[in-house]
Length: 95
Image (spheres, rainbow, N blue to C red):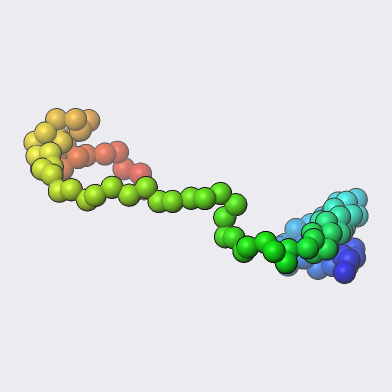
């Protein structure tokens, strides 16, 4: 399988990209190189290789969920730059 300049033009049109002729040729060459490499990987003998979802062994680090007392509203408001009616007042972000 190989990519033609027409294929690149079609994908560029779908992505609404306006490519110069030089870019189309460059991407055609690059995409064909990628496909050639993928075909090369397909030649590997993976008969005795176990399927993996990750190359690295990953495990989630979990801790026990422990309930504890939260800060009081008065203590939280001590760190607030500004407050109004028991709530933190911030500058408007919408016009």
